[in-house]
Image 1: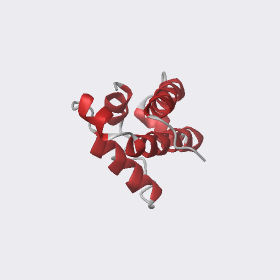
Image 2 (image 1 turned 90 degrees about the horizontal axis):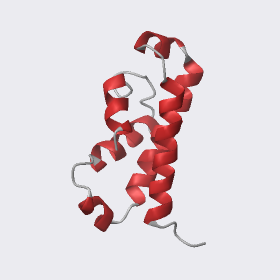
Image 3 (image 1 turned 30 degrees about the vertical axis):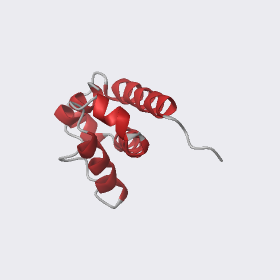
Image 4 (image 1 turned 45 degrees about the vertical axis):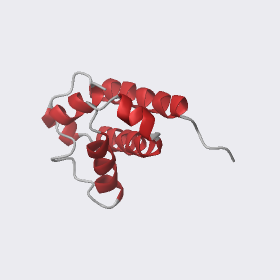
Amino acid sequence: MSERGDRDLLADIIICLEKIREYIHGLTYEDFLADEKTQDAVIRNIEIIGEASKKLTTEVKNRYPSIPWKMIAGTRDRLIHGKRSPAPHLRPIRLAHIGGL
């Protein structure tokens, strides 16, 4: 099985960001906290973004030093390893920041 390249990984990240934007569009933070399905969908896409970011080459990460690659990967790790609560990792400001990639 071949490794997926940077282009595919970046495409995955963009797709997940678009999904997150769609899922949270028009929601207040309170609405988001009350909607477990949306939380689960957002969390899953953040996990995918984090996993894809970990697989990107150093060359790509160095080309975009303003993107917080370690924070993105760390958020994925916290979510995967049991930190599933929406706060503080899923506050709208974080989503907006991640979504601004």
